[in-house]
Length: 343
Ligand code: KG4
Ligand code: ZN
Image 1 (cartoon, helix red, strand yellow):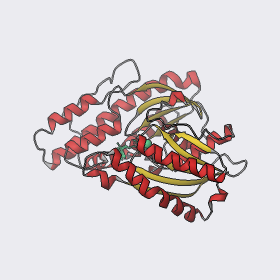
Image 2 (cartoon, protein in one colour):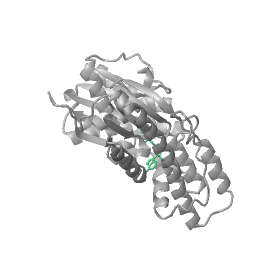
Image 3 (cartoon, protein in one colour):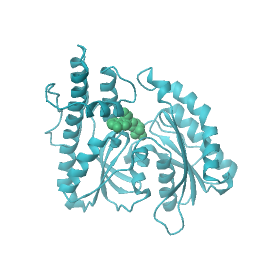
């Protein structure tokens, strides 16, 4: 089975072609092309939805052709067309899903509607056997959720952010320090040059709360106050370092509690870190250590599969097609808001 996937929910236009051979559990990436728009948006300090839509519109067709060429196949060889249909920015979702629907109609092959967050989590199964149920922490630009994945399409959210997503907190911290977008990789680099002296005494909201929820808006307010006065480079590096340690401590505390509570009860054998923030080396290392301590397998995709990409969309399409062998309706509408509990 060969599936072409399209991702246009945010500021990356991405197309991938994945093959799954008969009787094989895994997928093979035949080709992937991702075009990031971050340069177009960085001067605005965040994503401008209308600009994103126009860029998707201008580049998607070219990218599909390029990806087919790279995979050395033509459209006739594609068995299904998958596209992100939510959550995300409506303009981009419409462009990607309409493109996939048109290809599906013209080639008489199924159209698969894919939830972007499901793609982030399932992509870990592309090359590795991971049994359900497993625990997963999804950290992206718009979502921070701790989940139990029970089946490929059944997720239970046990905790989530009550305000900002973690990626957003990275992006805002970078902006407040006078740097660009996306903030995650910038903060990660700055933090490497600094040390955590606990000088700034950043708040750790909900660290000791009884639930699995997160809150990052207080942290943002605190950083805004700190950066009202200009900081020299050393202080900037130390603030980035302290920020990264602070949020990691919160994530680890919540996940450790979830592992203690659910590992035995639900026979969880794996913990999956997913989403753009999961590409952060410091966070990955801390989670690797946590999972070793608790004898639970730690899995995180390689960096380029953590950030937005179409491989995860094509793969989620394959997982769905393996279970339900029919097309989604071509009249379905994209859903800018779409919970993983409503698949
Ligand atoms: O999953 P993703 O690529 O897109 C969404 O679905 O939102 O996540 C994007 C987020 C951005 O906020 C970006 O700053 C953050 O992931 N990010 C990182 C790193 N790379 C990307 N955060 C921390 N460290 C990184 N290395
Ligand atoms: Zn994403």
